[in-house]
Image (tube, rainbow, N blue to C red):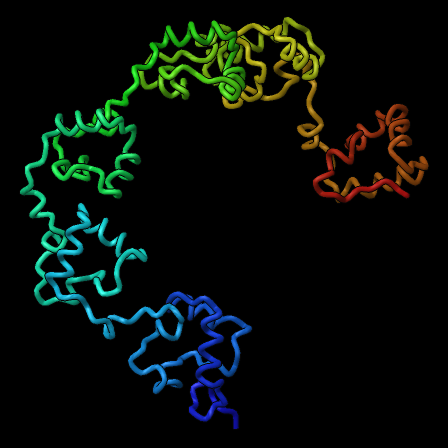
Length: 393
């Protein structure tokens, strides 16, 4: 018969040795302990429920003694008297319950000050009373403008800097630690600390960009990586001037005249098609060449297949007037692979086609034959997705 782990007759490690092993594992709480218990390397002679196995040794000591943190459970802690504990908390001047709860989770909280005083003290009434907020409201605080004058005189530059001074008790007692919550006139830290910047107008910023020979967005990104902008020049120019309603695009801002494709107004599909026919191009590569050389009119898109996708576009052959149809589209008229494969195998065997070069020579001579058989001249392209054809080795 095998004994269960919880059996008192189980061959457990001695309490001192077990305690020594647990303390080396840096267990901080019950969650850490449960996770450790689930590990595959957990020793068979260490109990997962030590309070049952080592009841006598752990009596009155709690799980903190077992984990090595020496933290006591609420039942074992001797709490400070209510008035003494409340006085201690009030001196810290927490503005609300959230601040107090956040502090209570840190090591700064003494062990004999409860995180949830309502559960511990019968004298407890409200968190407002516990934190002393009610009493602080009766303090004759400076008005908004007086507090603002003090803050600017101390050259406090941000809310973060204010919070740091507050935690160091360097804010006068007649100024609230949380002015944003206290003053009805509050309009944000920049106005309170007078750190608001009077940014350049769109036209002034445009003149600055021109003076630095910045020729577009990418040019601007390179410039700000190597150079400092004036304090009154907005770093995110696009979003800043868009909010003002003055932004007209990088082409206007950097004076290059370029307009982003998504912002351009193109002519209709039929007009673009009519223009394309006049060029008498042989195919898409020739159009691409014109696009790269920037020889297309501004109202003709370089990527018409994208711009007119749902507005008349069919094929490049239709757009350019060549009436050529891509092999992918023509594949709809070819034999399905199941019927085409045996015919290809016969042709490979009959004409001794062993590789791509042999096939190209065959197509030049017998192209008409393939047309009659409804077979594509590029079988590896048409049927490639099905991955069913390979050259004979």
